[in-house]
Length: 520
Image (cartoon, rainbow, N blue to C red; front, top):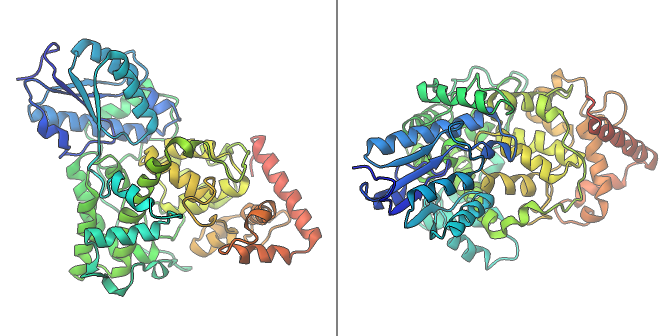
């Protein structure tokens, strides 16, 4: 029997990235006395400008989840986009707290400090106790992370990863790592060569069903200002589809994932990548099930150990580590700007209108699909922003809104720390900077580009290369004696002073051109 408005005891708030089919609090609910609350609010797509596909994904997954809860006999109070006047999550909840008068509210730990503050303030104003519980859809609790972090001066992912491998018994042979080593990264840096990747089996795609089409229409109607396109939308929006996507990846792409995980190729958005990050981040699939499937593929002889280890490291290593860092340092992430970057985000990040083929490809693909794999993010869009000196808050807002898998706990440390080094080295031991030659080595983008990655000066100079040398020059005092970057800065010391001055001038011209909204 569904609860009435006057008889709600516990109100469970389910956020759009907490859609686990085995959500632990659901087991505690009494259908006659308790209820679930969910809401689609415009502000969640506007506080940073969201990609239309990202909002469509969240809304569709939420509506599918709510439908399953109702089928299970639970009472669900659900607010649809455009059908209520409240613009923010807190305001929408406030209206229903007044109407439902629950005894308490429960929510799993939100993946964004801003959202948690809203819920806390709303419940405090209404005088309703709020219980914020640990989210069990991760492998490492924040308590465990803090215990690990408390014993170290530097919080490096590799050591966290090794400890968790051993603690959780993942890719282990007794007390030793499988294959006799923890990390096979050196085996996972392949590129396709001049002939390219050849024929690749396309990943399983999910044709939008009625619910997804309704969500896509609602986004177009009520949020017409959102960026990007939804014509190519084919993401998994249910746990069943997420399991299909996992099986498809394990069968067709995992064996070569390790070798080519850093490779790039024109008009090839997926290559050997899993397309599972969005499903993981919305909790449509549990990370342990993904890891177990990959490990079993190795034990069955289907995929080599370097590929499996590299894939598992992204989930057990980076994903869990980044979440720990997000809550460990709290909202300080928003304030950091260690390199004093002050340039605006170029317009090309919103329209892909540039002659630089690597950026044209990565941004164009992003606008079309809401997706780019980790090297496109780190070493193309992220690298250019760092070399240019874009304000961390601006590039953070772009990443948070533009990618379908973006939730702040995973996006903010990766951008501010890993990509932009704006955290001053709390996450990464050195800035990830390179000339255009890196992109040339890992892709075929440069073959179709008017710029030469070997050149730093002149009309054909690659902006990445010009800005790279300018970056070294601008940050000479900070990094010239750094043990992991000294070699790069030694090359700068050998440069002719007149050439360096010309590079400074060309870098200044690039910045001015982009700051004025002009095209490069």
